[in-house]
Image (cartoon, rainbow, N blue to C red; front, side):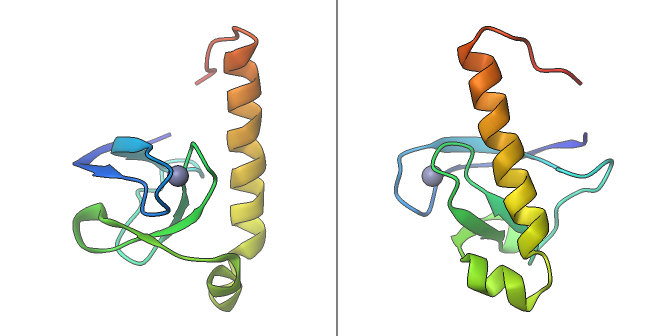
Length: 93
Ligand SMILES: [Zn+2]
């Protein structure tokens, strides 16, 4: 997974989660402007603006771009990571 350092920013859904990096969910792909993402805290659907500035999006919007299923998989994976962390498992890279 490719990890990119971004500006410090809060989740635009207002959950209070702060992030300063993004990770491509699929292989070595680097997220770019217009790509979708999710909040790792509240699982809100987000999109990248300029310089990876996060903006609020929706599953409906992701459907227009044909990535709804991918996002739903990413949300399921993110929830899985949280469960593993809560149980004390290390992230597997
Ligand atoms: Zn959030």
